[in-house]
Length: 270
Picture 1 (cartoon, rainbow, N blue to C red):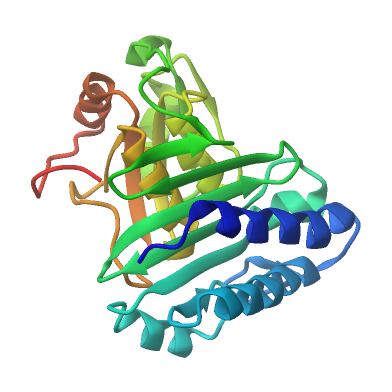
Picture 2 (picture 1 turned 90 degrees about the horizontal axis):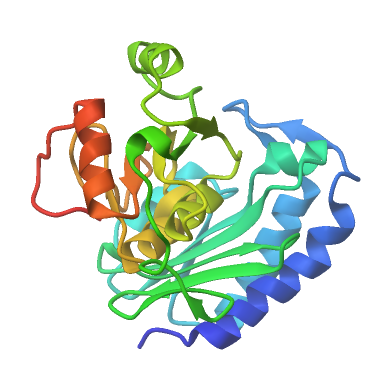
């Protein structure tokens, strides 16, 4: 049985308020082997949330970004009984630099698909959540269909240039198809902001499972659409980084992937 969102949200919200807010822009960081940053807040969040989830739902395994890769792969090999997937601090560079855009992202993977997702922005006190087949919410209010779309030429693109193929990044920089462009620095919030109509199209070239698992479900349950640059569904229960092009409204999504030259390789979108 899928856990109720209310007690799950309480765990994430209370832990973020306790562990993240007092440390925001007030602690140092260290560099991991892959060049990304790690702070004491990442580890404090991982440890406290992991203990709380295990105590409340002991049958589910627990995977977090800051665990060893060998252990992550072991956990992903069998998700039939349920596996929590946590990014304890998505946007660590923003957090360490004092930029007010970061989040906590938690997904429940069951039998190789995401069935529950939650993304919490502690500075705005915004909790995005979704359950498969039941819709998406922001602080308990539905998100998705009520947000008006814009034509591609008049829209806002949430685009991470750093991880895109150079040819595509150059084309976007010199011939942008949208009106303006933003990069938030938190992948989980990228997905949620597209779902909430705060951006119109989304593009990212390389994100990890814990970055996108919860957000991809939230966008999907809001009625949104996404494909990888290879034209495949984005979600895979592996450590392989995935690219994404996404939009909330279907006609805008089709316009966006046509401009990008994406050819669908599988039926449906995520």
